[in-house]
Length: 102
Picture 1 (cartoon, one colour):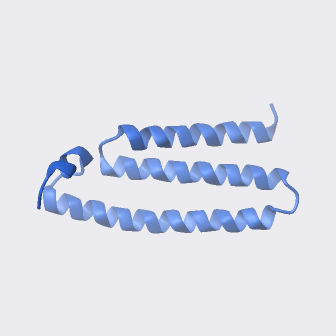
Picture 2: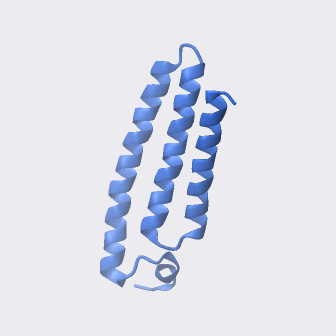
């Protein structure tokens, strides 16, 4: 097994774990962590392809920095929303929140 194959399998496994977390979890904080795991899987794939495709190192690094920046902004905004949900309804369970009326 080459390093590229290993990195692609690792990235796919991370993405699948993140997807499972998004679909199966009911806690908003755990869903956010799963989304971050999926974004990190994308970064692993970008790094793996940048290593093996000649001339794309700079483009891949710029894309990785862009993904990390978007992930940081997403976490900041989503945590603010989760805190507001907890203050309003005193729960972060997504099933319970979807049934509540304000």
